[in-house]
Length: 121
Image 1 (cartoon, helix red, strand yellow):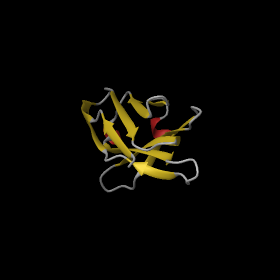
Image 2 (cartoon, rainbow, N blue to C red):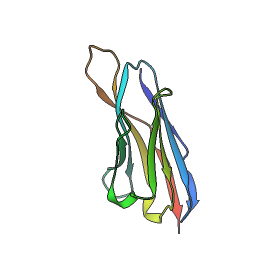
Image 3 (cartoon, one colour):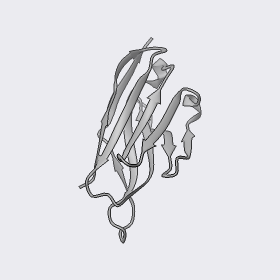
Image 4 (cartoon, one colour):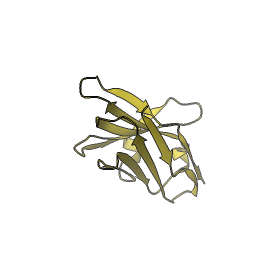
């Protein structure tokens, strides 16, 4: 019943910016960590950024200083502001959230459908 819906992907020139958003809906008791992953053609899916329920963040080295992850706990959303984009940032970006659907149940990971980000040189 939990769904994550992403938006904000698209085509942008190198040096430009995009903002990705992801909204979780359905039966949600509590959202723990949230994050963004990406998968480029021929490469494994990699963790881009994470944010805990308390707002602590972590980034892969390649995006530090350029990307910013944030969340709105009241709206069950997580965003990724991407600045100074490079062609190597081109990938399908996936939203992830660790969610407890009921207070007695264990937490599970949920994934968005993915959104394409293409950065032209």
